[in-house]
Image 1: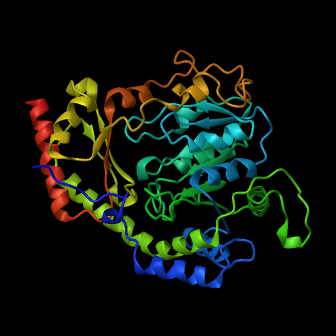
Image 2: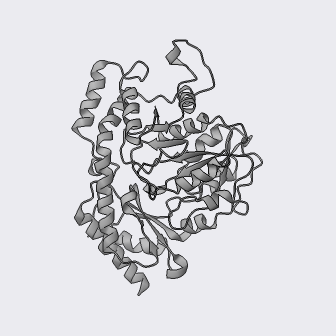
Image 3: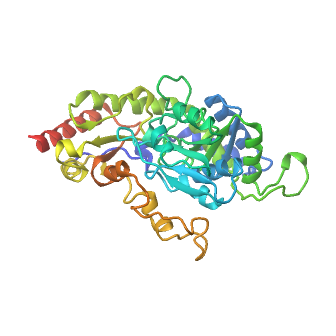
Length: 398
């Protein structure tokens, strides 16, 4: 008999309850649900900025919109290049394309799935405007090294922290999102905390913060009282109803991350699987997912063989994370952007021959496995997982 695990798709894997109900009722009773003239969204922004130790947080409608605000905040020119990882959510590149930027894809560290200084440097050009540094699955990329490299070249660092609340870079006390020029977070259903959807963009730069606020509200400078539009912008305003739910979730974040770490560490400590890379520093990882990277060349099997066995025990493990690398999707490979123009990537070759990312391709094809994990897993769940991971490994290596 297989085991059923808590899932973030419903209450079994979420910490949503009386606090969120009270928050919703509080806003509903006021009759004012909008951010404009409301109190919940500004309060949420202050509370999140305080948690990260940054000057500014701008709330928005989603993690993708948060990333779009970040791109707009650095004022790129059409054709500017943004270095991106090929394994990420499409939201990482969406704002780049929408602002006329050109995504350039860099390969990944085979042990973390994140870009490195070396892989970034290999694809940087004189047109590079920013690095979209994704902290994948809850693990911090080398943001300190990347920031130092980028600062020497006048290149911005935008941290995509949608999967990495409270993750910490090696040797640092601060949280991801506070090291680059801008940090971006998501409140989508599956994230550590959720309001259904929503996002945060954080920065210590006053000018960037103002540009992001304007871009999120049709370029409307509401602080001046004048009804005008200072620049092109969209409507990415978070509602006060969403913000109230997020405010109820925010105090729960440390315990949510802490409990995920405890479960993950219990699993890691219980298995012995040479040739399968597990998280090296679980106390710094926030475990949006539980990643495992198989050295397929060494072991002679990949994620398809492994998950075929673990699936029989009901373990929620998938291979590859994506079905195809981001540059292999029709949006890039067939230039499906604005009408038939292909703009802003009309003349960019995103074929596999042109995009040299062998590590990322190997992870997708055979090396990368990700397991669902959340704060409501029990120690019994962890022990069951560890037992069946070990059994699968032993069966494939005997």
